Every structure is written in C-alpha cells, then in structure tokens.
Length: 599
Image 1 (cartoon, one colour):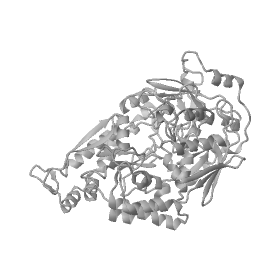
Image 2: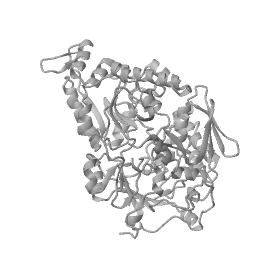
Image 3: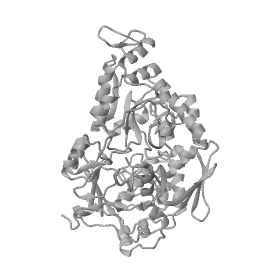
Image 4: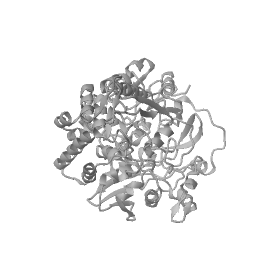
C-alpha cells in the first residue's frame, strides 16, 4: 500500500501543479491556425504505432454526434473526458481535491464560489477562452433541458468582475456541493460557435432541441483541450494532438506523448479484451477478468495486488420502487438478503471488489470517517436466505407446493426482469447470479440484456423492474453525498414514463430528502459525520437500491507492449482515469513510447 502522505507528495509534483504556477506564452503557430480554419482535406493518414495511443471502452456503437449539448454524445465529448473539451476544475480521486484546468484557482464563501479563469486559456483556433464563454456555457444549462439543467435550482447567477474572476452565486436553498460538482463536470464550450446555433433554434419562449441536436460538431470542432477530432468511422474515432494547446506553454512547450489517440469500437467486452491481449489496445476501461493472469501479455491494472483496481464508487441494483411488488420495503429488504454477494465478487468480478458492507458509504478512503460499523451490523443486510424468507413470511407472503412465492392474495408473484447493457459481461454474470439467488426464495427472475440505448432510456423513463447502474459523477468532490442524491433525491422525481436524469427508481422519502438538502450546508465536521451516519442508516432501513460491488470509477488496465510509464499504485503521479478522464489527463504527458523509431 502507498501511504496517503506519499500520494499527496507525489501529486503535488504533478503536471497539474506545473500548469498552475508557470506563466503562459503565445505560441499559436500560423500553420496550426490555418489547419483549424481550412480543414484537412487529405485522406486519412497512416498512424505510426509509436505515435498512436489506442484506447477502448468509452463508446460501444458507431459514432453519430460530437455535440456536447446532446444528452449522450460520442467520445470524446461525453462525461468527464477532458481531451477535447475542458472543465474549469478537475477532480483528482487520489487527493480528493479539485485540480486546476481552465481555472487556475477557486475560493468559496457561505453564499458563493469564485473561480479564476486562467489568463493563458485559449481555444484551438488561437482565440482566448473568456469569462463570457464560461458564463454562456452555464447559461445554456439554465435554458435547455441538458443533464446539468437541475444545477440551476442552486445557482442564482454567474457573474464576472472583469479580472477573470467568475462567481457562482448560490440560491437561498444553497448547495455548494452541487455547484462545485457542476464546475468540475461542465465542459466549457465556445460562445462564438454555439450562440448562433441556439439563436436559430429559438421557438417562442423555448428552444427547438431537435434543431440544436442536428449540429453534429464533427468537422474541426473549436475546443480548448489537447486533442481535436480528426476523423471517425463506424469502428473508430481518431483524435489528433492540438499542436498549439495552450497549457504546453507552461511546460516549456512539452506536448502530450501520443500524436494520435484512437478510440476503437468493438461489440462487447470479449472483443475489447481480445484486442487488448493482441496489443491492439493500449488502455481499456472494459472489465477484464483475472487480470493477474494477463502479465504474460504485458497487461496489468492499477495495482498488482487484490483488488487490483482502485474502488471509488458503488455499482448497484436500481429498484423500481413505485411498482408492485417493489413498492413494499419488506420485499426490497428480502431481495437484499437473498443476493449472494460473495459469489458475485468471485465469479462475476474476479475479486476486483473488497467485501461490500451494508449501506451506501465506502468504508475506506476519504469516506471511511462517515461509516459506522455498528449501525451497519444493526440495520444492514447480508446474504441469508433464511432471513429473507422470514421477512417475506412476516410481511404476508407465502409459498405454494412448487416453492413459488405467493402474495397476500395467494397469487404467484409475477416474473421480474433484471436489466443491463448487452455485452457488459461482468454485469451479465452478476445478473445471472442474482437470478439464481432470487430463485432460492421462490422468485422467478429473468435476465434482460439490451443495447445500451434501450437500457439508458428504460432507466430515465423508469420502465424497468431492476437494473444495474453505477452512480454518475464517480469523479466527484461531492461524494458520498452525490451518490445518495443521484439515487434518492425527490427533487428529480418524475412519474414513470417521463425522463429523469436522477432517481431512476422513483424513490420518495421525506426524511431522507431533508438530510440530502441539509448535508451540503454543514461546515462542522462532527455534525457532518453524524448527518452522514443518519443518512446511511435511513438508506439501510428503506433499501432504495441494493449495492452490488465497490468498483473503480472506470476499470483501468493497460498494455506495455507499445507504451510505458502508466500511472500505477507504485507510481501514482496521476489518478487511474485511463489518461483521458478528469485529472487523469496529465498522464498523457508522461507515458513513453517503447519504439522511438516507429514500427
């Protein structure tokens, strides 16, 4: 194990820090400007292996759009991927802090959060990134139905003092955690590109989103990150290094090591993993079983020791709490006792997870101080089919001669489905074990493996029974609060059939919602610990979702056949974010090509 002190010391020497303290120079070349403005009309060039980093796992279907306003855009515009569009700050899971990105510092008061936009920041066309760009980006979330729209329940206004200080003023129901999270998760986009598009989509008092989403943003996008979209096809997305990237001036012109990043697209985990073994992928976020056996193929993960990956989030079974029979808490609690988590840990996840403890707080790392072991034992649930049956019996359920579970009216409980995206083999294996577990208490369940888009839409509309899901915002300064919020807040409640980006299970509980509203305002550490422990207790009592495994924010494994010096537990100079997510992008400057001359 690497000590926390050592991690902090090493991180303090990272590129992020260097970017923050070194002055900027104007190094935009005429050649680069011309390329941005005119475009590259030549054929797709050959990509030398020693200059190309192949990654996989962030897209599963042929790309269709790179519009950051789309609810589900393709790599590299989705989520917290920071190689093309950048955020103001970036969460670093090793330190639990926010690193500089487009902003070089931030401060907060009880009523506001202020960031200082780096005066060196530029778009890849050489124009300055301005406070107007930042304010306009956040304004779009207030007027359009984006995934960040609800953040404006907690942002009153965003202002600029004229000196690159941008202040987010909090509403009366202040929630600095949501606002900090929004600052770290929102991709800043150029006002000059998107304002004409938005104006053209104006429709009365609203906007025609279909017209906005027609824009695919696939021809030399204007962005601030170190890479830009070059080409794409149904089986790959090609990025090229932006030779005039603004932060290079803070490192005496040092550039990211790969000239090209190619995201390969395969159908299912097995195909991704086969490509990894063959050396056709360098970095993968795909679940790769038995990683300890892959050293012969020059493949490893963050750590050489169990659990190999760095756990930061909790993959869970989301429950449709408004539907029969899941609207009975006793039924949900019985399900929790029925699932054999140890079998899932070994058979589905290759022991990549520590033993799951009751509740929704990670019992180690930065969250460990909020975990109460005694209450977990008292109010939690562990695998025990006899106890599951006892809970059901006490709630009025019974069994027929075939062992089928009957409701209070002596009718068989309906068949339930357990859903996840097809090809996500670790989740599929977990669901098969869950189905076996439910059968032990007389419940007939069937796996439902669907394409990603169907699964995502079913969750948003609430048209499912049980579905595997990892909470969004894994890279979040706001955890563990944000994890509870994403799965349990009544603020995002929508009737079944209407789309919601949070609380897919349509869970409602006034006491829990009150705690979720209170915790972000607490500044006293003792009071905060008590509040989190009460929230975790209420979670265990009401069972809104069932935790299945602790897992990394993204799986992280890499091949050293073509590139070396990846971040590891022994060399934690950057977090294990696949070199492209949040603060993990700093690793792109430090990896080294094995073959300097090319293949």
